[in-house]
Image 1: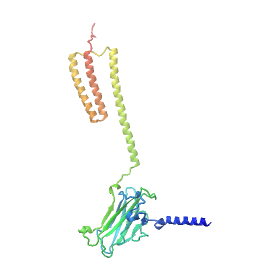
Image 2 (image 1 turned 30 degrees about the vertical axis):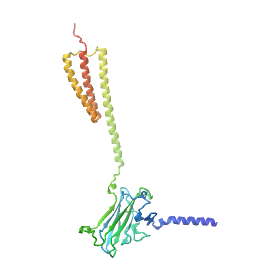
Image 3 (image 1 turned 135 degrees about the vertical axis):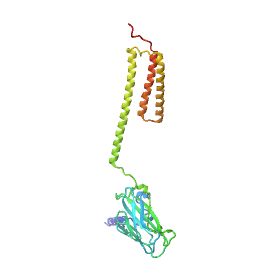
Image 4 (image 1 turned 120 degrees about the horizontal axis):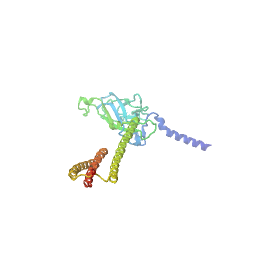
Length: 318
C-alpha cells in the first residue's frame, strides 16, 4: 500500500512539474526556454526553431531619441501571407517602463517586459522613458505569427527585431524631421504578396486548357487526314490512268519545256519556303499547308515530264 502511495505521489509531482510552465503563463509565451530568454533566442518551439523573414514584425510610434519621463504609445504588428494572428514579447531591459495595453499583459517572470494576453495582432503598448539620461535604450521584440491549429509546428513563423532609441540631444538627430516618430520593422515585405489560387479560377483554366488541346489536336487530325486523302486520291488517279486509260496524254515538247520550267521554279520556291518554316519553328498548320503546296508543285513537274515522254496517239482518225 505504501509503495502504491509513493508511486502515486511521484506521478503527481512529475505531472505538476510538466504542467507548471503552462500554468505559469496560460495565455502568453514563457519568459525563458531551453536556449535562454525568449526575447533573445526567439520562439524556437515554432517554425522549425529558426527565425523567418516571411513574418514582418513592426513597431510604430518609436522616437529617434526619447525625452526624459515622456510616455510614448507603441503599436506592435505582425504581417504574414496567411497567418493573421499571433503573439509577441517586448523588452527594454528595464531601462524605462513598459505598460501593457488591451490584449497584452506584463510578463509574470519579468514584469518589465510585456507580451500578448491572447493571440491577436496590432497591440498598443505604452513606454515611459527614463527620468534621467541613461544613454541609448536597447529594445528586443519577438513576434510569432501562428497558423491557428494550436500546435507548435512549422506553419508558425516568427522573427526578431532589435532597435535602439537614442538619448536626449543625441547626434543621431540632425534635423527637425528626424524628431518625428517612426516605424521600425524586420522581414521580407515581398513574401506577404503571395497570391492565393482561386479554385474556380484554377478549374476554369484547366477546362480552357482541355478545350485548347481538343481544338489543336482536332485541327491536327483533320488536316493530316485530309492531306493523306488528297495524296491517296492522286496516287489512285495515276494508277487508274495507267491501267485503264493507257497512260497520260502526250504533251509536245514545245509546250512541255516552258511549262516544266515554270512548274520547277514554283516547286523550288515552295520547297525553300517549307524548309525555312521548319527551321524557324513556325506553327505546324502553316508548315503543313506549304508542304502540301510543295508536293503539288513537284507533282506538276512530274506530270509535265511523263506527258512529254508519252507517245503520240491519234484519236480523230476515220
